[in-house]
Image (cartoon, rainbow, N blue to C red):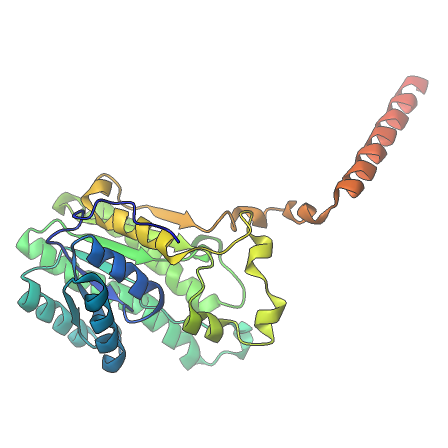
Length: 297
């Protein structure tokens, strides 16, 4: 189990809004933010879920959690979250855009509505929330921080998750663009691009049987394991803290080297030691034959 890397008061008196904070990675990150002294507002569409999560988080950490239902596709609901957070905690210092939607499918099987649903949650929700909080910070001269949970295929692209790739790619470019534009206000924006970090609900929905049995994510990861939630929480907390005050416009990959393993010759990992011996001998023989041909010419 990964332990926290920052000192206990690293986020003392800071207030952070976490979208999609009721379950999975959002819940895990919120837990660590609370341990570091932050006030946390968690939001998602299901009030009952975030109410239960808020109670669990407060019981476990002794921190202060506000649970506000919100559909990130609705600007009025976002404004409500912002207002409620300010009313409870006095101000907002950070925003973690973690709300997501995704499913695996051949793109030609998707309806227009299915494509729109993913893009609206992931891209529209991210820029709506970022715009609302950014305007508040600029008006009140607050040096806030936005952290967007991206994905490795936001830069590479990927088949079978095209709506998500389109949305995450757009959100990543927004992150970099606003980092350049809003830097003069002291506002920082960064992103994290995680590889596989399994969460029970989301993982099961994304990889239902028999797909789950066909795919072993660790087989294509150089470190031969999936990520631990604590590892991602450590990185998120660092980027939301003042310790990362000179970092902006960056996307940090945390994937055990998965993206790097997609190189043209990475499949050669399957070659056994004995086969490498045979290949080496064949190369030697080919080189000898080439030299002889050169000498006879």
